[in-house]
Image (cartoon, rainbow, N blue to C red; front, top):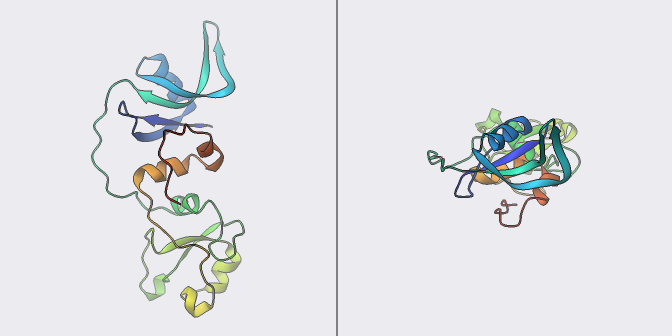
Length: 168
């Protein structure tokens, strides 16, 4: 199922919703389509609309300020674009830079995406102890960056230029 980015009335990213939910918001005049898929359309008996990619709410929604994006394993894999931080191959697991056995926490700055082989080889050691330098340092994405990264790399590159680019 395709994800559609929802912008607040002030063009700030709010969330992603399913395609069905996005169409319902547009049909109920609660949102307008800011960007549509170029060649895809949704057709019904009395309906023919473009498939929304980005929608903007018509009314401003006040959202409590969120200082940081919540950490999750899926979020780490998405942030690192499913690439191993040690070898660059496809990552399927999350590795703790400072292992939990040595007091490491589940946090954005202490976890990286890793392939199963490198995760097993590093074991309960730090990258320095294991002789496995990181190809890139972990970073903490802003909540908006985490949401845009969750759309996927291919989808992200085709979003409008006026949307902020996430930190790399």
